[in-house]
Image (cartoon, rainbow, N blue to C red):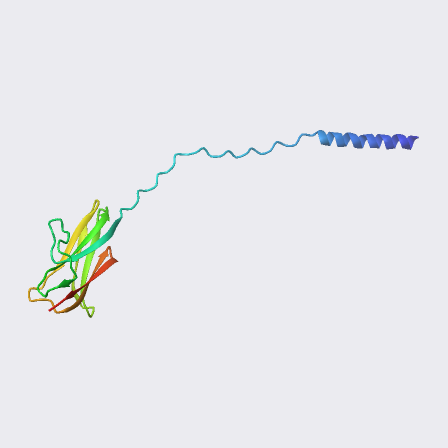
Length: 158
């Protein structure tokens, strides 16, 4: 009987340890990180000023608004040849360049103007040769800040 008593005691002790272990409370979980409070959004930097060339007008005459009043692509040797560059947008400074070339790529004239538009604008370039242009085909290429924005081809007839 003694062994039964020891077995019961041992069994009881085991149960007591099991119940004691089950009754232990778990350590508290670590504190959860709280979501940061919403901060004031940082404003985006203002958009960079943008100027774009919208059209090139080629002709023999311009008005007070610098727009071509007599468009054309065929000129006489003694004509003054105008190109009006129409732009939109605004910028504190932008550079327009007109490069005029003769049929073989020979540069006839190249000039630049710095503009500071605040909306639609017209900028005029022209070439003239009092003793007359040689007959042939020509081209004017317009660039804005060093990037080509368009060309116009024209002809001088002798």
